[in-house]
Length: 149
Image 1 (cartoon, rainbow, N blue to C red):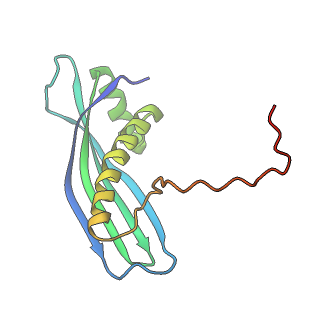
Image 2: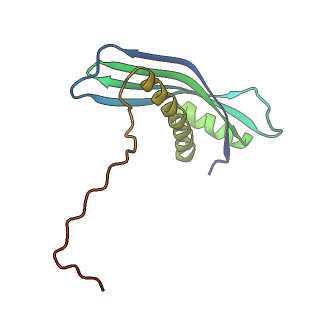
């Protein structure tokens, strides 16, 4: 298990484009791609390293109605021994251990989805995620035998 702490997140590019009015049946797809991982020359805490994960996140409204694209990076603080293991694993097949991957992906999804929902609202696009809604309660059918007991 890798001991890690998120110490930074920044978006470097946001593009949102609405090509046509949204009507009829649409399909919304999202994609996250972690492009690169490297060690950063940042000393936040003595005896800790900082890894940088560069990413692209996109949401597309099909058939070619709109898109949201974001680029950025996530900074993760890890132990120096773990830095070497992670960099070696990344160089081999661009793969990192599952617990690191889950933590990095969930953080990116969280931050980008919040920003995307805000942008979708501004551009009158339907939200790419199912949002909770409150509905009126359905009246219960009356039971003919009013039994209390």
